[in-house]
Amino acid sequence: MKILVAAKRVPDPNATIKVRPDGSGIVTDNVKYVVNPFCEIAIEEALRIKEKQGGAEVVLVSVGGKAAQEQLRTGLAMGADRAILVLSETEVEPAIVARVIAKLTESEKPDLVLMGKQAIDDDSNVVGQMVAEMLGWAQATYASEVKLAADKQSAVVTREVDGGLEDLEIKLPGVITTDLRLNEPRYASLPGIMKARKKELKEIPLAEVGVDTAPTIKIQKLEPPPKRQAGKKVGSVQELVDLLHSEAKVI
Amino acid sequence: MNVLVFAEHQHKKFSKVALVAVKAGQVLAEKTGGTCSAAVLGTDVEGLATELASYGLKTVYAVEHPALEHYVADAHAQALANLAKEKGLDAVVATASAIGKDLLPRVAVRLNAGIACDITDITDGGGFERPMYAGNAIAAISIETPHKVVSVRATAFDAAAKGAAGSVEKVAATIDTGALRMKFVSFNETKSDRPVLTEARIVVSGGRGLKNGENFTIVLEPLVDAMGAAMGASRAAVDAGFVPNDLQVGQTGKVVAPELYVAVGISGAIQHLAGMKDSKVIVAINKDEEAPIFQVADYGLVADLFKAVPEMKDAVDKLKHH
Image 1 (tube, rainbow over the protein chains, first blue to last red):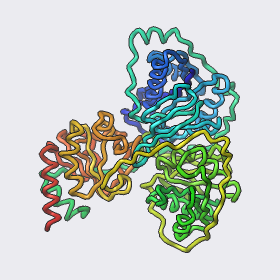
Image 2: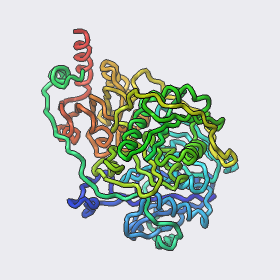
Image 3: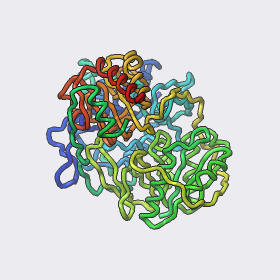
Image 4: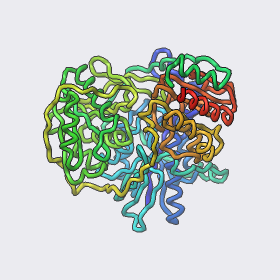
């Protein structure tokens, strides 16, 4: 079995993000970068499937600048087998990332594509669904449990949807996107980190992948959100309830 | 631009989010000089379509096919994209709910359309605003393709109001059933007598400060119910397994904007603030006076929640009996 896993380099979710004064992007100086947390969950799930099956190949793919090598090495240190970095030093919009991943499935022929449900930088939540549609495949987004059939031709995925949990059966090959509670990703071990240095990390310039890179959307500018003013501290529960009743008039 | 709204329903009932999508679709049509129609997908949905037609829509399509009995992304994407093509409609709009977010990217691929996700505003001329980086940046974006697909943040628009009644048209959906690869198995609904989190007037959320799931039940829930509120939680509380994920308020969970949001034992991580900072009134109860949640709270109480929450429940009860 072969599993293709997407891994995006994103700013640390706990970092304070500031918009550049000219609105052209965010301030990136001194910002720490990590593997997108949902991608990390996808890598972990692929590794668990591999361990359970007693063998499978886990291939990572990232679309980004040279610096994304660092995140791919992290995934390799967790236990993935090899990695592909599709190089672009300029930001690539989600639809084009989807085209790249769909295109790579032609040569990689994975049985399963695992991705995070969203990247925590652009918060789009579209790439997995787009890849599935481009390939005419099934998708199961927001997965909190993945049960592969014994013949590996299908899977039943429990999905975190509004108001409860849904079980969905998908034929493979298919795309599964991960939600928070699917698993808890492992940390890379020291031997894992040593081994990762020797694993294959292939780089392909975006222009050589063979996909249409014409933009479908354009970000005109970024602005900081309107600031919310801190209010007052109250001294007691009674004072709080009185104010909510008589001043704010919400209870 | 002629707009087609995907009107989401569950068990043959529209949720509030369907009317929010209608409203956003009407705003988009108005700002770009076009009409707004809607589609209800399923089996036997003509009654629902008739109900929706009274909200000032041009036409409501009752799109029927056995493959649309339950929501599944591949069949619904085919039906919706084919309808937009057959009726010559330029833009598809839905709410950024679990279903909307699951469905629209596939529709965008089928229509060769750019997609604007989770938008919070529509500008004159048909541009969009959407939050990025957990709401730390608001992006002004444009869609560069002839067809456009838009998902709408449910808290950013009002629900559509009743208006002139439009026509209802029954349509047999165009679906290549041989290409379908997904099958609905079951839905395990979270049973609750409380209001729906994303629609509630008051939300009371708990965080890691509650220490365990049992304390959600014995400490927080009595206050939630005394206030007639929906219960939410921080990602930290969900991660720790105190409560189910569908209670999570934040960047990667639900976005809420109630009249009153009470954050109990929540420090106020960036990703939590992204899900609640548009609430009208915010109350924070936390024993750490340096907690970032106090920077967005209208009323802050520095206190031990295990003392303050039961006290607050009693005070709310007393208020109700006056």
